[in-house]
Image 1 (tube, one colour):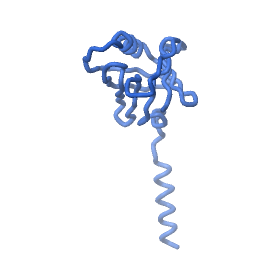
Image 2 (cartoon, rainbow, N blue to C red):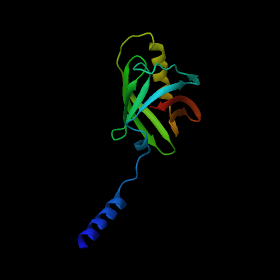
Image 3 (cartoon, rainbow, N blue to C red):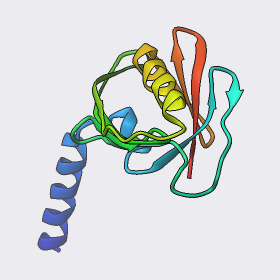
Image 4 (cartoon, rainbow, N blue to C red):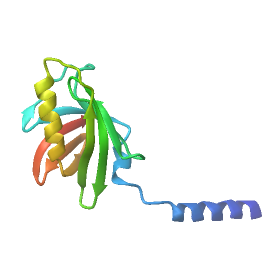
Length: 136
């Protein structure tokens, strides 16, 4: 009985001291495929050529594919669903979709807010939706 009471006390103490989960803990480590950019649907191939992002909440880093090159960088979150993408870099392959990727990276740099609805992540500049990614 004493052992059970000790275990219960430890569990209650640990649960009470656990940190509040960050908002990105619910959407990190998942693939988010780009489905819309600046109100224009993005054609999906269902394969490796689709633009996507993956977030690593512990490090506040992201990686993905821009349609031509691998991309990665950092992101920061703050109050009121604010997000910023920084230190964005990409490989330098040349391909027919390079203009699309250049627009995507430029648009990503404009993002300052996010919203998660169902399986969609809306990346916004203020209240205007710039990019929509879908959880896959």
